[in-house]
Length: 132
Image (spheres, helix red, strand yellow):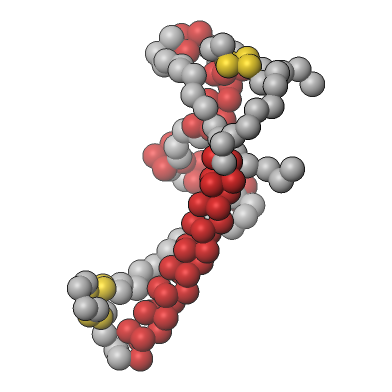
């Protein structure tokens, strides 16, 4: 597999990262642990609010509002619902552009030039970690 060069940045050689990659790994791990702890605390707060039959709990410095709401969950296979929406002539009103697919088609050059002329492209970086 060939090496990629971006704006003079080559990946021909591996170099010491001065500990940056390890630090990023630690931060990402810590972030996952914090997010799990946050979810656990939210669930405990919800249970406490239910027990106390209230929608507000008070801490030392903050108050916490707990609001129950309905969330819509669509079937995994959306063929039937999309078909019904088209049949009832409401599909165009509620459908949206799939930007991920559109972006991919623009980058691959498979979209009409007239549409491509209305957008701009710029180079950016994605940083990800993988096990050695």
